[in-house]
Image (tube, rainbow, N blue to C red; front, side, top):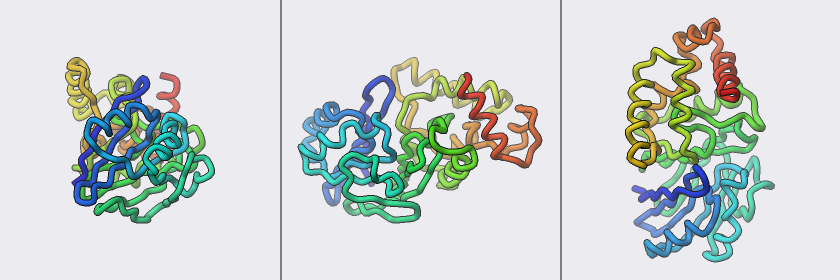
Length: 254
């Protein structure tokens, strides 16, 4: 299984190092900046072999070129957005298996936040690197996509096993929970998650990775097809895209 190290950077970003022990491959997922990654690699005596990008935003690719130059690392990113990924060597797309050392990742096209966003699911390690498509108790803003696209993208990720660990790219959970309670106030799973998040943050601990099974029950953006959420919003059940769009609209104004 992958050894995954979480590196907090900037204000609320998470960068991840993934070490595949059988081959020695080391990947960095969405390096906002290079320096903290270099320091962690030196501390662990690891040599970087791959830069793994989910989408083109600078807070996910800002360290690409420096890390590639220093370690001769291979940059992997979305085929649909190849032109906007600095230093890209290998492009991957929906349904493909990408081999990282001795472990493979299933690639999912998940547009919505950006038009070329992808996610990587390492099934053996039960690890999902989803960038800014899904957050704990939230999802990314629709900068380049539509509600229908994002709902379909979240549906792909929602279908993964309950014990999948969701390695999202930002520490947004506490604020997401405050919002989620306004649209899904009677959800006991959400109430339990909010209490857990408060406890973790009071101790200065991260709230991610979270478990996908918990997200499926508590994250309102994954529950747009639930009739109780539609009722809470004053919308008819049966049109999850409309429900999702309303939840996203309210979150944008929250």
